Image (cartoon, rainbow, N blue to C red; front, side, top):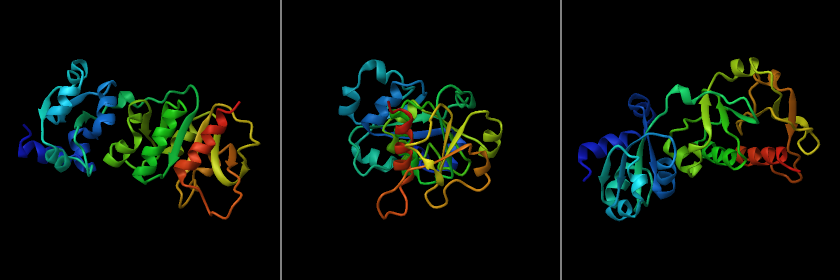
Amino acid sequence: MLSKRQSKYFKSLQLKKYRQTEGKFLVEGAKGVEEVLQSDFEVEALIGTSAYLSSLAENLKSKAKETIEAKETDLLQVGTFKSNNTGIAVVKIPGQDRNVVEEKGLILALDAVNDPGNLGTIIRIADWYGIKTLVCSMDTADVYNPKVINSTMGSFTRVNVMYADLKDYLSKSDKKVYGALLEGESIYKTDLTDGIVLMGSESHGISEELRPFVTDPVKIPGRGGAESLNVAVATAVVLDNFFRG
């Protein structure tokens, strides 16, 4: 059974400073837990109700170094869900060897997207379109924040998320950089090829220091009165146009 000491320790991983110190993060709910058990992430502990643990295939349960039976109230104490009658996985944060940029295909870059829900949704969108690499500015939300992980619905296991000084990263790239800017050319009229898609925050857009690296500014033409689009929605629209036809 889950001890009070274990409960306190696992709960601390909700906070970034403890995730960084311990090198671990939480994955909650059946969907996320089963996705991570099927991935190459290292699962340090699997905490679950008796019914849930019994329902899991042995080859999945065996991926966890430790299995701990817990009550539903324990899961709610450790995690962030308001309702969870299945399980939580405690997962090792991968080393830097995982964060190697795959230069083939389309790459997505995010500049100061600091809302965890937006980042999680963007990771899920990237996974939908087969984007394997997501490069984030250092002030973008932490990918291992529970809100981000939960929002990805397991897609974090298939998209390599790395953090970098985007100015340095873009200056060293010879790829086209498609930047979402209000003064850009209509995305529907732009000749789109592989490159880097750069999305900025909703409040400020792409930062001034990164704009000189944008080789192909693009915009989503609006037809109504809304001032802007949610950054995750805008990312989906932009990416969709790369895969039309």
